[in-house]
Image (cartoon, rainbow, N blue to C red; front, side, top):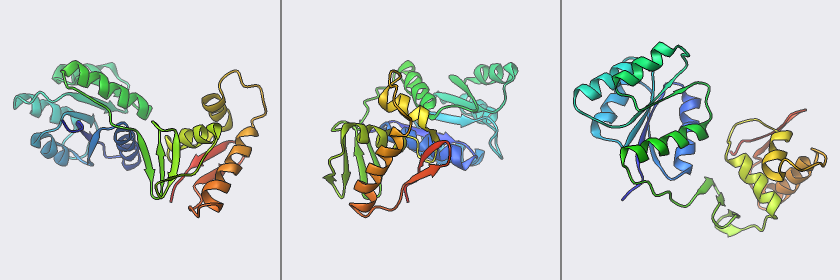
Amino acid sequence: MGAPRILVAEDDGPIREIVVHHLARDGFAPIEAPDGATALRIARDGTDLIVLDVGLPGVDGFEITRTLRREGRQTPVIMLTARADEIDRVVGLELGADDYIAKPFSPREVVARVRVVLRRAGARYVPGPRVLRFGRLEIHEAAREARIDGVDIGLKPREYQLLRALAENVGIAMSREALLRQVWGYDFDGDDRTVDVHIRRLRQKLVEGHGLAECFQALHGYGYKFSPA
């Protein structure tokens, strides 16, 4: 059985890309649609679940859901919306949506909701091995290794955890405090410059040692962003 095919219908490119990235990272097979007509065509071809923005151009999410249900298609639908009104949420659910997520949201929340709705729908989901790929760099979570050109570069545990924390949030600014909590834990009472020291070590191993393009963007007075070339 192949990976579940998840249609991500969202006209906001950056939002669509980050949801697609997190779904692919967790072993799903995401398909993108930037507008309502494209989303409806792909949905009719068959997918396992639809992550559907209400405000799509052309044909909106409500109309897509209404059309699919009228045609007898029971594909699970998770609606995304920038609207906070309860009436919109009620309308979506009454049309046949299975879940509803208000913006702004965490991509991890979307992935978690996808899993729950698929289970509820009776779909069997077996996650594949989690490997984050960025050109020559691969982060293998099962092996807890960072590899360049397929070879383990021997990161120490904290270096690996810091790299993974950043790589799981491509393009997202992460504060030193957030990185400390995620990598070192809430009980850590050291200086937040510990993060800077470990970033320098990662740069030495990845950029200087193996010729990768600079991928750690420093944000003055805040933290770091992982921006692979």
